[in-house]
Image (tube, rainbow, N blue to C red; front, side, top):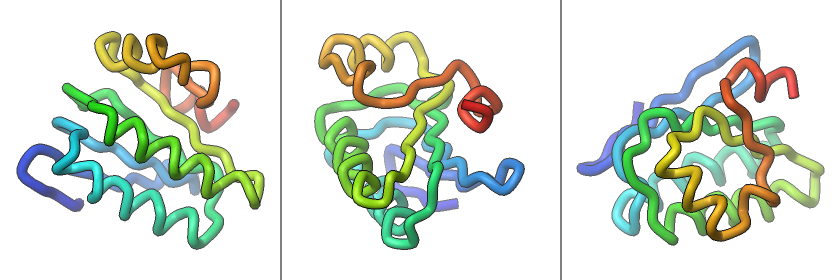
Length: 115
């Protein structure tokens, strides 16, 4: 588990698939930590990478930018970044920014693994 003051990141191996499970706030202070984790997977060309947001209480533009950057880094090798278990308050931000059309989003981790 990786932590900073406003966020913790748990890495889970679910049926051989990497699941990144942050909790707390993804903001300008904590997003570099999430970025570091995501980039480590993109460098290894791991796909899919699932991010479970169920325990995220807040996300700002730097957090959203972190996901966009990871997705861009995955495109050359046709990698998949899947976002699962999105709280309603966080989903509103993805909807408002139209990023719900860009990311693969799932109700559950199991749905993301199957999808």
